[in-house]
Image (cartoon, rainbow, N blue to C red; front, side):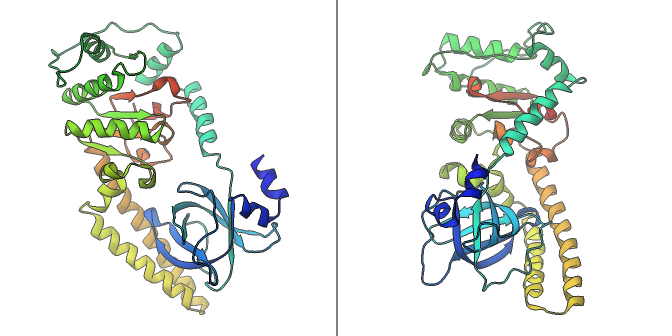
Length: 362
């Protein structure tokens, strides 16, 4: 339906509806995470601000030359990384050759239908169908009623860190920690389920377990992180910083990466990439262009390897990794961890969950 809408309506009407931006010019270019080319677009002429629009960080957009004719050939597609009143930045994959874009030309950005979540839902169902071996296979069998729950056991005596828990919450903590496969903490709103979940996580960390903590929404994940911080847990929040509450952004992966020991080496490579990109835009010699492209290909590979190594080390040393369920997939940083890395998954507000992608990590 979205595709039909964008194909039938004129671009001026699409801009009025906030799904298209016309007559943009390139305001800057630089190298982003994992070697992606980030291009910043800004209004042309005397305009100081972008028209009112519905574009935000994480949206997929198509790039083409600006024209009233909507059938212009696409130059590429990317992901919006930042939107302000005066500019919009888009990250393009390294496979897209966008070095020759003219700074003086006018461009159009069209918001595209985002089918990422639907593809992940479909893949999750396919993965469930094909889980045949390992500890996950027994869990799946239990969840679908094809196998019996294992007998509960608890190895250590529980000393509660939150002294304000009532008896029902304490029972829920003991119950959850003693269940080998699955446990559900159920109760009406306001009865302290998330407080109980935090206690479970803290005790699981004390037992030496690696934990993946998830929730259906960003605000629910941030709520978990806020509470865990109070207990000084080694936690990392996955997700785009723009979607994370400001006061907990320092715990997100991007912030931790920017302060890591490997950052200086990564920045050196990124600067070399930006210099090569600048030279490529200026030169008209075919031989030099080819050499610069080869250099950039090598630098991108090196940059990706260094960033992935830094990301892997940070994730491996965290006791708790927090993420929305749609981000807990092999499309993101979790792909860098070994299979079986996590011992326990915690899902807050689990009754609102559409699908799980976590089975690859146990």
